[in-house]
Length: 286
Image (cartoon, rainbow, N blue to C red; front, side, top):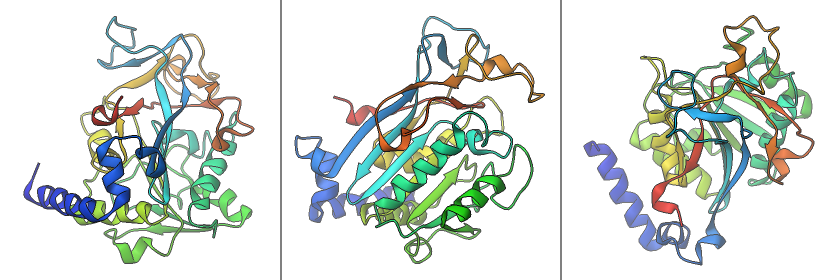
């Protein structure tokens, strides 16, 4: 841990001594449920697994039916972490129930701040998708358009994240970020959620030598008790159709195992593309 992150840790520890929110979350006692909750919401089926070594073969040590979606309440705010950012890309957003899931997530997160319909997509950390792009795989323009049709104000952040920047919004979206977040940015994001903001973190696979999404997102997610794992969720039996002209589509699972939760209302299946699994941080496991 570098000097700036150590200073951030000291600051948050000091904050914990004054804040019942952080103190409860850190203590992992029965009072945690008042200020912090973690729920697994969606999994691959029993034919899916979390591929760690990239050989696309289920090995003995690899997890079967991995979790791909979790929700967190933290202080006054809410967090959703999902292992895949590609499900909202232009090429997949209108497949299966992907759009419904995306809209449900934003609505649930926005309610933490009174549902004032203001969403900020970060684009300052080499994110995988851009709301202004019409590219099939690298664009979120269709999803951003659907949010605006629903009544949301949707904007893009291209500068360092500060409290002054994000406090005007109800939801902050970070998808597949590859550039590290500064300690001051992490502090602003944690404070944003503690004070009632909604945060959506979306992961990605980890096999590329240029891929640092897990490390980048975990620098934020760990503060909410969540870990993006370094794996790729695969399913050789239940996969989405082959008409998208992508290599080996059987690797990309259809998700249809869900818990009951508002973000899953009307959602029966979701197409994922090169996503990872997510789990509760070890320090917060029972």
